[in-house]
Amino acid sequence: MKLPSRVYFIVDPLDTGRDPVVLAEAMLAAGARLVQLRLKSVPTGALVEIARRVRDLTATAGARFIVNDRIDVALAVGADGVHLGQEDLPVDVARRLLGPDRWIGFSTHSEAQLAAAAGCGADYLSLGPIFVTTSRSPADPVIGCDRLRTARAHTTEPLVAIGGITAATMRGVLAAGADAVSVIAAVVRAPDVTRAAAELLTIAGG
Image (tube, rainbow, N blue to C red; front, side, top):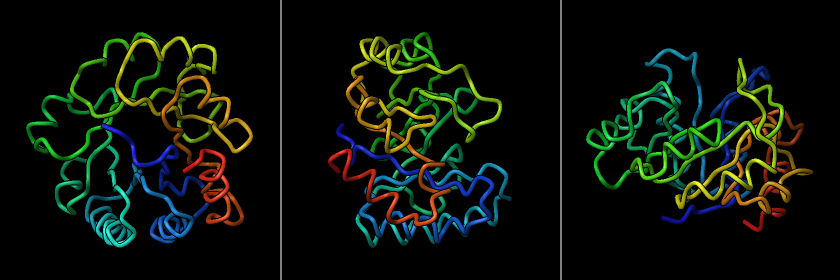
């Protein structure tokens, strides 16, 4: 498969207090084509409602919509796929539940985990944190661009780099072998979310 963009936007307000639906709308206004909803502490009922609204926005914009962790929510709102972590359902189980057409992403946090995930059936793999990040607590050890370059050889699946990536570091991460970069804080904490998202898309070439 080919990712629709080199920038993978994640809707997670973090500590900003911002409305996730408004954040998604701002990212899509910049031209986002790949959006994940990541709300780990929101009750299921509220999460479904938010996901449904973001699904409507992404459908209108022609963007892919991924739900973090929650296969049930992804199915409930007709999302394009789900992103799973190391402690979530195995990819093969998720595939049986989701069917062949929805995307499944899978997180890895080291070269060993990336190598183990190669050929697991995920449509794409993520690797991080590349740099120090405040979006995940506790965070895994930083990988850096040199280890990302080495890790790239472990898989032929599309590879999404995540963790502390900004407009200033994005080019180096892509040059190290990532097919796309995933961003949270660099966008959701920006004074102008749409402008920040548009800058990243311009740097990445779409």
